[in-house]
Image 1 (spheres, rainbow, N blue to C red):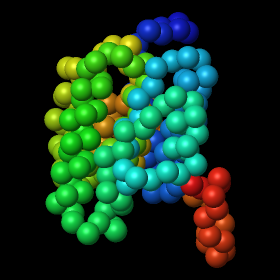
Image 2: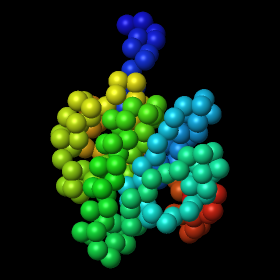
Image 3: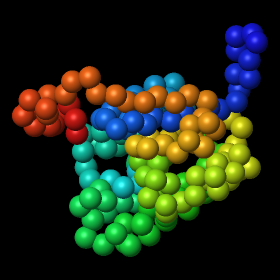
Image 4: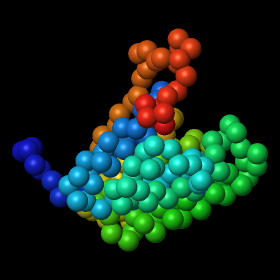
Amino acid sequence: MSLGHDSKRGLVLVHTGEERGKSTSAYGVILRMLGRNKSVALIQFLKHESGNWGEIRAFKQLGLEPIKTGDGFTWTSKNIDETQARALHGWRKARAIIISDDYELVVLDEFTYLMDFGWLDATEVINWLQAKKPARLNLLITGRKAPAQLIEYADTVTEMRKVKHAYDSGILARAGIEF
């Protein structure tokens, strides 16, 4: 195979693993795409819709308005049925964005949770993507416990593994570093 083979085909990337950094790494890809004047959509499935963390502020300054469909992390949910309904609504929005063919990168942040929790069937998601994802679209999916079918389908899979973290020494998360 020669270098550049199939260079117009969009890639499917997965950032998974039990440790931190999956979303942050995806945000780096977003910045590179925006820096090259590429069209980007970011759908955040679990983060609270009113969240205004540092990366959200920066994206807004760059003209990217993240779509947040969550009501907070599932372990803090006051109504898991509502959390699930919001996440599935996010998947409906994401499908419309994907098939619009208006973007060169779509990031589905924390999307693996929907499959891990049984809210979506991984095989059905992949079958839909295979049938509907525009050929040029790059798709980046983040979240823990990426299903085996998604890992098999993806072109590139990165697993986050902690070697050492300041939190383990009692140092709390810091603005600008972790949020």
